Length: 373
Image (cartoon, rainbow, N blue to C red; front, side, top):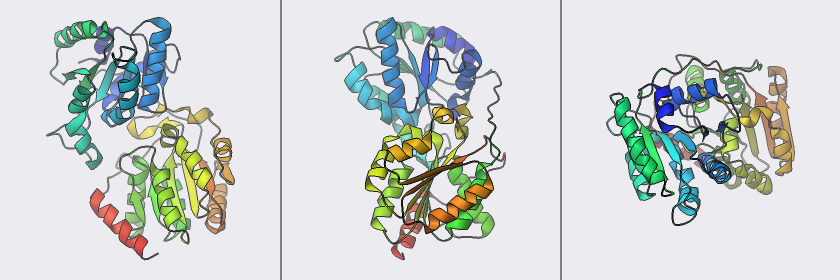
C-alpha cells in the first residue's frame, strides 16, 4: 500500500523511531514531510528512547504517538512497554510500526532469522495487538485494523503494524549527504593496513561487510575480525571484553556513529575500565547509512568531548587521510586507551557484497586466533 495512505489512516502527527531499510518508504516520507522536527518527527538513539519520548508526547498532548523501528528493536522496547506504557502502570497508548526482517520463509541475513521468528510472539507476550501489512493488503483492510486499534488505544493499550518486505510503496525520493570527503570503505582499508594482524571487532552493517571485502581483496584471513552482524551498539563492549582478557595484545574496534549513540553508556564503561590496549575508531557520517541514510544526531555531537568525559585518556577527531594515518599509527604504539573519530561521507558501493562465511564460522575462527595471542 502507499505509505502516505497508511500515515493518513493512522492519523497521528508525531512520529519517532530508529530507521529501518524495511521501512525506508516511511522514513523517506517523514523526512520529506517533516524533516527533523521535535513537534512532529524525531529520530532517536534507540527504540527504548523512542518509546519514552512518545510517552512524553502523550503526557503533554493527550494524543497518540507513533514509534517506528526494525523488529530487532523490540528488545529495546520491552522495558518501557512493560513498566511504563502498560495499562497496569500508566496506560499510555502508542502505535508501533515494525519492519519484519527475517520473516519465516523469506531469505534474510543470519542476525534476522530468530528475531523474525519471534517478532509477532514478542508483541503478543507484551500484550500488543498487531496487524500484518503485506504487498496485497488493501487500504480498506488497514483502515478496518486501525478502527479496531482505536478502541484498544482508548483503553490505554498499545498496538502495532508489522510491515512485510516491500509492503509500503510510493515514497518520495530523498537525498542524504554531508560535506565530508573520506569514504568509509577507504577508511577501513587504512585501518586494516596499520592494524596489521591485530584483532578487530567491527560494528553491524556495511562497515563489517566492507571489512570482510577488504580482507578478501588483500588475500588475508578473516580470522583477525569479529563481525558484529547484529546487536547494534554493542561492538565496543565486545571489544572491551576481548581487550581486558588479552592485555598484551592491541585490540581495535571499528564503530559507527549510530551504533555509538544507540548505547552510549558503553563508552562510560570502557572509559572507566581504561584498557590500555584498546583503540576505539568511530566512523561518523552523521547518518544511519546502512538502512538508507537518515540522519543521526552525531553530526552535531562532540564525540571527542564525550569520550574524554567518559574517561578516555586520549581522543581526537580527523577529517583527512593524512591525519587518519598519523593517528592510527600513534594509537597502535600508544599504551593507552584511545578514541579516533573519523568524519566520513555518506554512501557505499552498489555492488558491496556480504560475508560468505557463517556467523558461527566467524566466531570459531576469531576465537582460535585469539588463543594464539
